[in-house]
Length: 239
Image (cartoon, rainbow, N blue to C red; front, top):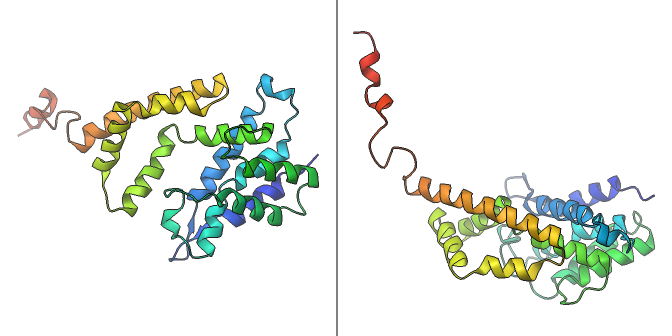
């Protein structure tokens, strides 16, 4: 039985990035945790258990699948604020796999480490052979759906000097051009995961409607007449 706690601890040390103020930026780390946890849950689907997925390899690959960002940051190729909000070169997965191999060499059995490396290196491929690669890819795609995914849009907007209206406009355009419908159809191999993505997408749509109403001050009574209780509130006070 492989102990997973040391893997989680080492990955956190590798993936938390420092800020100029001496604090820590948890953006990449939290994304990696979600992907790793989701991948492990997806691997428990009955259709996959017969393929004997390696849980330790899935956890490691999920944690380090985007570690290439850290390599690029240390090499001075990007700024910290660009992590996860810019497109990645083809070497991104290779960098993440190499970083993981070095970091976890003494913490993972060699066969699990090899499986995790293969999973990361094939994440961008159209046909992924390993079960570990398939579940990590599924989990990474799932993380693009739901309210938490808006944090990436917010960071991108802040980086480009844009506000909430830009986030709203991008959402509307993608909906008009059926972007999310295409993503649902193309991104998921397993029906259970696709259904969860649909539920998350519905929650984002409700959130975005409320967000747009608040941004334009159309929520509540502010855009029209005040409610009767507020209009006559002072009359109930003693003279």
